[in-house]
Amino acid sequence: MLIAGIRKAGTFASLCLLGMSLGACGPSDGGSSEKDNAAGRANVDATTRGNANDGSNSRGAADAATTRDVISENMPYAELGDELVYGYFVAPADMFEPLPAVIMIHEWWGLNDNIRAMADRLAAEGFIVLAVDLYGGKIAKNSAEARQLMLSVVEDTELANDNIRSAFEFVSETAGAPKVGAIGWRFGGTWSLNAAILFADELDATVIYYAQVTDDEDKLRPIESPILGLFAAKDISMKVRSVEAFGEALERLRKDHEIHIYPGVSQTFADPTSEKYDEVAAADAWRRTLEFLDRYLTVDES
Figure 1: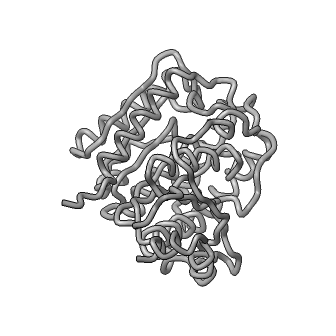
Figure 2: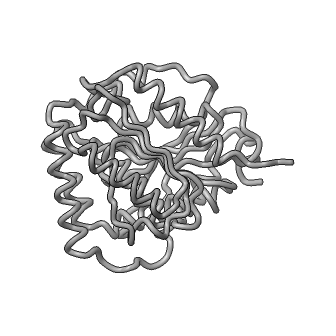
């Protein structure tokens, strides 16, 4: 199989070559509505208010030791607007067969060292991980730059949708993953939920950390993916009542979901680079994340 051959050859070169030939996954579904665009801009404003004092450094997660050796490569996974899009592809070093894949979506800073470190950490648990780039290679150095980059995505959500479609095709078809999940934090958590909507009956697991969510049942109804939502009670950009409404909508729709709201912590509690980092809540959330992904992405080989 493809990944086995790559591992035996000791390089990702053949996968890179395949990646170079990739384009967006099929035609777009049309532009976003003005209502969606307004909601997106409101999301940008809320995120900016809640995280204006955070920095974009990469300490913490980048220094954490992984439980297993991994191999990684900056790899093209899409061609959008005649430009190759590069993500961070990482897998266990001792992998000989295709493993379940997780599409990882960065926070508002972009695909920085912290997200790469989180991808390493997750891959060490037995997954292949593709950390995508919705910012075209740009990384924000401060909250003002992060705000502008988020707005650029809001203003062309279909380009971001095509980016996620390409990532899904890359891990499922090119890399041969038998099951695929998505995970994201804050801005990336919102896009993780969007991925569940884009791949309503194809995505196998969705993890959302303290993101802007919705209780719009028309949008949530098509989702078949199980959802794990991890939120902060003191998040000033996403009120607890909104999270509860999201959970209630999923309950009414009889969706497979778990929602956890951590008391006494703020948004970005799981980000070691944030002044709001909470080690206890972060550890519990990571445990729940791994248990959830193991439950829904593990392939039954019996």
